[in-house]
Amino acid sequence: RTKKFFNPVFLFYYRLLHPKYSAVTDVYVLIFLCDFINFIIVIFGYWAFGKHSAGADVMSSISENQVDLHVYLMPLTHFQSSDLDETLYYSAVTDVYVLIFLCDFINFIIVIFGYWAFGVRTSCYDFSTSWLVQMYVFASTFFLRNKLQMVNFFCYEEQNVFGLSVEYILVQCTFLPSFQVVPFLVELRYVMDWVWTDTTLGLSSWLQMEDIYANIFCLKCMREAEKRYPIPRGVKKKAMVKYGAGGLLVFLLIIIIWFPLLFMSLVNTAGLPNHPIDATIEIAMGGYQPLFKMSAQQQYLRGVDQEEYDNMFRRFLIDPNAMTFLSRYEAVDIVKVKIDGNSRSIWGISPPSRHAMLNDLLSDNPITVRVEWQFTRDPTTGSSEFAGDEYSFQILQGDPQRLKLAAMLNGTLQEPVEIYNLFPKYVKVPGVKGVARPANELMTAPGNRLDFSNVTVRLNHSRVTEELEGEVEWWTVQELVGVGPDRRSMPYMEMITFNDKVSPPEFSFLAGYGIVGLYLSLVLVVGKFVRMFVSGISYRIMFTEMPNVDRILKLCLDIFLVRETGELSLEEDLFSKLIFLYRSPETMIKWSKEKTS
Figure 1: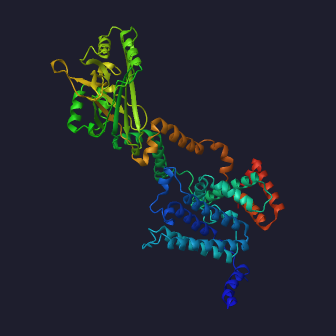
Figure 2 (figure 1 turned 180 degrees about the horizontal axis):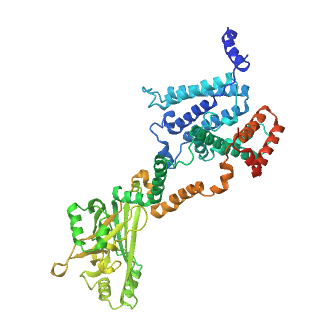
Figure 3 (figure 1 turned 90 degrees about the horizontal axis):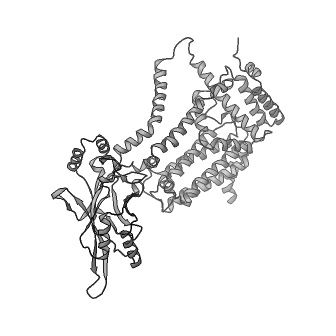
């Protein structure tokens, strides 16, 4: 009974390996196409083949620099399987090919039904939505074509590796550069061909042969196209050709040249608002313990409405620079930051440092006041998380502010001390990189500190508790607004930030380069790539303007033929003849002359 069960299987594979007669057929192009489609399915639908990866996205995983092990192993295994399949095809080892075919088929059945049974079984089997169904369909086609190839023997035509057929048409000539532009794909194919093909050529000679054949193949396609669509002599090019193809190229070149400026302009006008989520200001004097540090969040970061925006416009109406600056922003891009006047931290200066600070204020040496501001943005918008800047100035000898501050430290003065032009009123916060500098365009004299805001500072004292002895100290900073009789101090400091828009997250990697970076990394690279096609053409005329390439093409095909039949000595002789032909311009001209009746 066992023999009766297995006899049909053995008989099938015996006839497969020892057929009486079968026409030689090459269906490897369709086999490779199905294999390539399955590889794409594995790459972009890998989440459909795992129990705990539903809904994952390969692009998001790559952008986060996190690749799961099975995401790496699945494409790698499929890629190696494709390489092995191609290797056996080149070698035409039917026995081994059948064995690999059986193992591959069994592995496919286990994977498909294993995943279906354990965790990915769903009620949806629609071809357009199920990666599993798509892989099953194309893999079944792949195995069917493999069986057909084994039944009809191997027919490895090396001249057919560049296209879908051996016809010399322009589509073939277009397919070849598209194939060559994929990094390492051509090199991988050349090396695999050389490794698994019996030949007398070294690797360098093999690469020369492949490059010569690729060039002759394209020339043959172009010569055949010229025969099919002849152009009469003395007839100017049609307007459709000039304005169609030429106009499109002109348009593309102009777009590439102006792309960085256009892209950044679109980001500034149609980008996403990028409001700060936190604003911090710190004031320090002479390198000692900071006097004041306070942050603002939530309701203390308020966007301006349209009426406030219009009032700001009217205020700077007579200043062209200010109007140009304001025109870059909308009301949604401007935020009012209110910093509470009471420092969030206790002034914990040590007695020796306090004494040294008092001596500095009473000395003849200038003392430096440093003001630092920093804004925190949401990093998910694609912008840099932090942007800030600092500003410092000196209080010189003889300034009455120094004596008042010293008296305040001594405890002999309780009134607030005025400090003029301490921090900027308007700050420009960049979208991606850079520092949040004062908006000089809104100053009457750009870069002049006289347009900064005035404040009052006071050192406060308080007991810790009624039961405990000792005091705590903190500083209060209040902004002075108004002039003359209307001059008053506010319980807060106000800064107005102009926030550059950011591009959507999909384009943030481009916006991060900036205009100069885009020109250096994109335009110059594309320009160099385009220049490769338009420069040095004169040096290639001898090899690209052959009127007739039939004799050279036949020589290449003869080399392939004798290699396939095992006539390796003849292969070496014919290749030497081909190399001599390319070394001799006179002989090349004779071989490539147009045929005469």
